[in-house]
Image (spheres, rainbow, N blue to C red):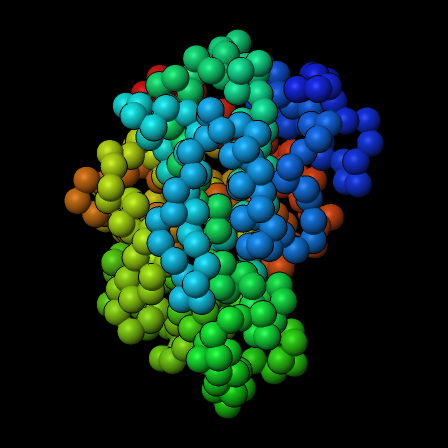
Length: 351
């Protein structure tokens, strides 16, 4: 299938700054072409401010098919948005999040682009011979596109872009302490670009109650990466996501990370092994990514697989180069992941 093989709303764009290839290996889909007037633009640093504007524009254009909520607020006062596509009261509910690690900021761009394509072809598109509108009549897809907006702001624009003087001081203190501990030899500019944590130096994906007490390998203080925090769910961002995970009877959850072209599906104590493995096989069949078992602790996927009322879940690691990934990597990421939302919705509708 070639890019533009199918005409979308208004036809297929003949020229755009970056060519986004059509998805490969997704079966019969009719929304593979580029949009003529996309709201979500492929850019090197897809920021919180741009995402916020795009969410507003998507709501204006596709309001009948999109609901927007706020599940919380970051330490630096940024909204944590939840986008809902499909039928909010459906029996099948899918939760997808991205951007929990700061330097992995290509993942918010990916899920925003996925959301726009699903919305654009909601009424006219199909997946494997089934109308998208019929699939989504019984499924709701909830997307939290940027769990860690403060950390992403640091990674993209540096500490000066933070609103809070206290948080700016914490980042500076992290750099001094990490230098003293030998955890970094980078310049401060590069250190900020490699930032993985939230606004006060906590790795949000090591902050969930999943063998948290046994995490002993990271630093014992706030840092650009791998500090688990003072207690489980100590951060407003991780707490908001955990609250959302406990607010509905989810059919599945997907955590988008980068990099490695991998799908993680298992965890020690996983209560939904077979369901998670089946999801992994579905996703790898579309993306071509390798299946792997998880070895980390304190992650969101790990938590929802072992909690009361466990949820079949995956972590999808996109991209093949170190983060922050250059925009040139997006074409391959999109090629592998464009149809994932439709595929998951169809799978959920049938299971």
